[in-house]
Length: 249
Image (cartoon, rainbow, N blue to C red; front, side, top):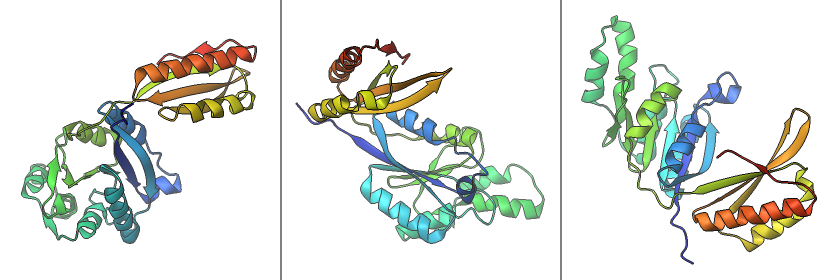
């Protein structure tokens, strides 16, 4: 059997407001689903503070370890929006004003002090290419395999579809419910996973309206293997005296 062609990604979520709990991240799920549809698998996600050294180290680690790196947050007009300068430092290039972004910003009139702050969003590392922002606001930018986007979900969702990804094999997923505790079939699932290393078997407990159970999710690049593994899981559930439940995919 041929090895799957896996194209990997890492997401760096940047912002003290996320770590403090004041703001909830709403971007990771959208990013993972969007990339997954294009054959790119998010293999790691990190939430990091607005700290120069932490951001630079995280970017350099991620861009050397994964095919793609996507960052969210820290490219706005305030003093703690430091992502652009950190990306420049990570790549060892100067930070410059991009005339295309500047023109877009200046198209919206504002008092001088406000315009000065807005123009901070025109700064990009030298050599960066722009990521179109379909809202009409300032663009994001890319450096090699690193793609830098806004943290505001609506803006990120206006940028991400404008990035081209060269994906690998698309991951397929199938799910089944077991109306029993994880421990009741944990041993058998472990044995099945050992026999089927080309798929990933995930176990996710739930409690709804007084009913306890486990949703079992099988993921892999070969649909036949995924579906045959799900059938084995259904057999395991029945062997424990229960009937498997269906899950809408």
